[in-house]
Amino acid sequence: MALSLFLIGAWIRWMKELTAPRIAILFTGFCLLAVTHPIPLAAFLVFACLYLGAMVLRDAAVQSSALPRPLRTALREFVHPIAVLAVMGVVFCLWISRLAGHFPKPHKVPDVPRSIFVRFSTEVLLHRLESPTVYKAFCVIFIALIAITAAGVLGALWTRRAKIDAISILPIALAAFFFLLSFTVPEFLIGGSFLGERFSIYWVLFLIAGAAVIKPPRWCTSAVSIVALAGAMAILFVQWHYLSNTARDLSNALNVPLVKPGSLGAIITESTRSDFIDPHTWAAANYFRESQAILTNAPWTDLKFIMIRPKQIEPWTYEDQSQFTLGEILDTLNKQRTVPLDFFVRYGADRSQTKELQERLGFQQVSNTPQLAVFFRPDAIRSAASPIEPH
Image (cartoon, rainbow, N blue to C red; front, side):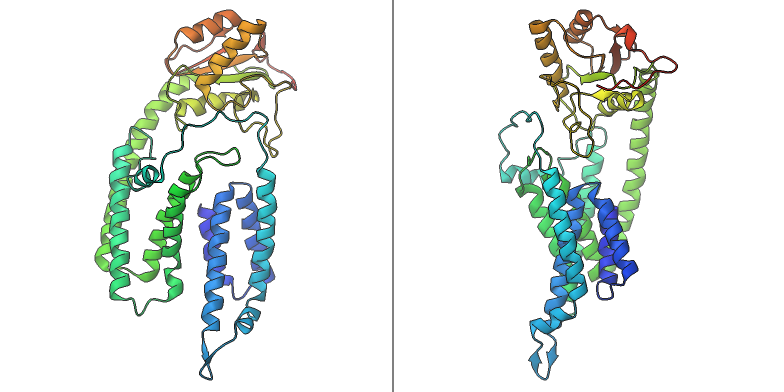
């Protein structure tokens, strides 16, 4: 997001004078965005195209000899930026087509999509901030910042409407556009999820950027500064307290022997709720990274730009819900009495099904913390110099 905003600022500054070094900087940032996520790349391209279009139309409307300039004449002055955006657009389309492949195993059918009204109310009330420890603090602070900024924008538009350049309203228009996308675009698309939620931060950022451009009243900037600074200090303290306690709980759990590189494993849980931002989930994934092991039940392990895949496909391969993985492994054991797993990591409470799986596989439990534990075959422990064993 920061890189996309930097490119937007560079485009505003350099669009009329695109030298070779500036074009190189823009394309370097463009390529870096391409390997992070397609949505910030799309946000930059949308802004660049709209800004270019607004500048062309404004120049075409300039009065010359009491007549507007022809649109063709205005377009000639922007040949270089049009060519640069055309190349970026083609590259973007090719890149998206590469990412649009289907996973080897399709996701489970999602729940019935929520209505647009429900998604709209969720967006307005910021219910997508899921962390239970700081949810209310985030909501109060963000809603206050958005409300103050929106009031300042409306006040500035009303009092200074005759003096505001139409192009200056572009960030506010984009804020409204991304706000609309946040609850109208499909929640699941080409194998990806949480699609609408990825637009949420953009409408807030462009709203603040638009407010800065049109210079709202002093009371607005003062109120935003006070709320933002006080809220940031409060949230930092709450987050530090929460994360320090979590890190202390996880440090003992992760201080266990690593498995051999290339070992096959899975993350399981018996929790009925799968929280994408649960630190224990990512701590379990970190164990795979430290071990150089293959996480079989992550849906992104077979993407074209990662190229990591198990030797054979199992029912839980590419599964994106850890609570379903446990049942699928047990079902496979009931059918064929063996599964190609060297270890598994359990987060959440240790209940009957995990104990059953451990006993049937003959795995040893290395960590006995209440939130995270590692189970593996005795021969899967890494020695002092274990070679990488490809699967």
